[in-house]
Length: 337
Image 1 (tube, rainbow, N blue to C red):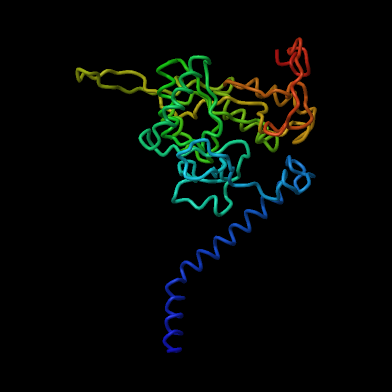
Image 2 (tube, rainbow, N blue to C red):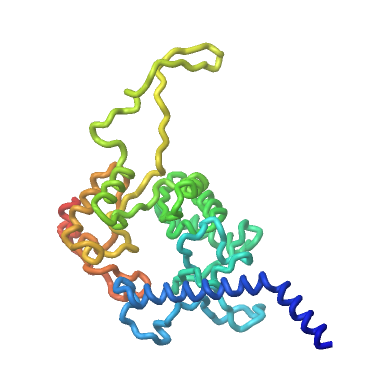
């Protein structure tokens, strides 16, 4: 009997070996992600948690779920546990990291935001009719009130949902201008979002440049054709084409060249550290001058012109901005004007 039990135990261990290995790999991943996150939030002086105490308000790791009281008597529990929204460093933006096939929350891969939760849209209106209808009405209202949208964290927005809502918004406002914060790490994936959503401009950040060479590359990449360069027409060569009647027509054939999605180039966004933090205070003026000289849409954030010394945390900051009588004559305002 004992021998039979031992053989059964060995057989079960063999059958479960892949699951043991998966468990060990998951634990190692969890430990690594927690360790890296704690190092960044607690030991990096650029983090908003740097120097804060470890207590109920500033936990050692961010909670993955938010608990709220149920308001509907039909809810099976008096409390609802909602998954906090967030993003994954280097994740595939086309994957739903909150879906049943994902272990992103279990593995602590999700860098969560504490001020919003993940909504379960599914992939089509039939999956959650009330939510899709509610957000459609909200989007249509915004399209009537504003001439443009900025899609925050577009790379973590379900593309089917964004496609549906923007289609509805453009029925209300056909000239709606759409810019998007899209950082997929892949130009091919960027094109998928741009083509399917009809994005007019992608947000690009000058403060991401780590040296003068990278800044030059960004300005050239988003800045259109350099002054003094040859127009594509000059590169044409004799050729022909066939018209709709089958007749050969001689002419000059110019080469086709690809282009990147249009950029909205920001000297600084609300996510970027201020020049005084990342570079020097004096860098603010030449940085914005380079951005201004590029042949694309440009943008900035409140506080940059006033030379704020540090990045404001948009979630936890409670102070109000000062009301300026003449913003164009404060800080860099006069130079930009």
